[in-house]
Length: 372
Image (cartoon, rainbow, N blue to C red; front, side):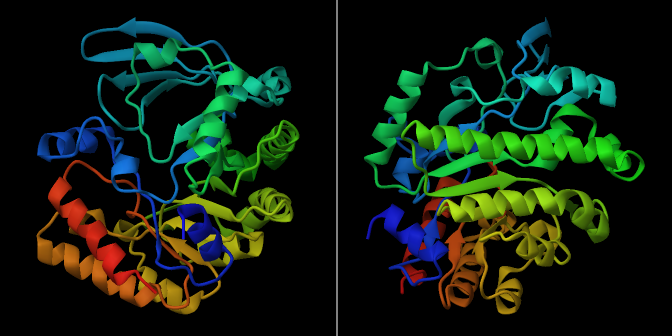
């Protein structure tokens, strides 16, 4: 059974040969692994034979010209494709420090929202889990010609991997334009403004997939990111979610599932309140199920048998002893593989505290104990 067949079975609620495997090591982690034995000429996704690798990414930005505004040996300040001014430390993976936002009012939004239309320049092929520290080359780099994107897609299809169409969700896109706290406040004080933001980005994602299908591209699944929670619960009430965000999440799920694509939803944070809402929206799978937020996939699987769970392997345990690795992987895999619907993934991404030997051992255990 190849990777594409395996993941399709898992999303369909059928029993494959083993649990699915994919993951997201940081660049600093890969650098450490190179020092510890990972061959430099082999991509980490290929070395570990992840079932999900090449993906099609939709750029949902305003596509404004990026500009470097200040640079030193330690940091850079630049404006991104949404006109947001960021400060980043060189060679470091992580969220930038935001210094200013272009969009602050409904009038600003009306001025720029017309740019949110499909174009081939919005599409690129990336490898699942690749994090790039921001540097001058990728700030000023231009998009690939469509012919090269299409060639990359055709080459990726030859690998028999499960390919995801990736896009930021409506809330995540809103927080790429406005300060996140401002978005949460405006959900209460200016709901019409926020609703228009959410709806416009939802329209962009749906229309873009219609267009790329017409251009001869067919993906296997849809993955969108919309963080609505932190370690103690949701950022806003379930009622607010149902009023403003649920209609957009439901539109996304309805559209992609009608197109034959299962929907994987990414949110960080505690899932107790989130999961019933996500199920109401129509998701197929939830990812990455942060252990550090108190989630335990063994308990969640017992309550929600019809959802595909992807993740929850605690990277703090993978950073410990071999005994820690064994206990984390074996107890979870043996518990949650029952009746299928599980994919191995870290509980967010793999930091450089995880050694190459520990990670190799973890995946050996997954393949051993994840067989059906």
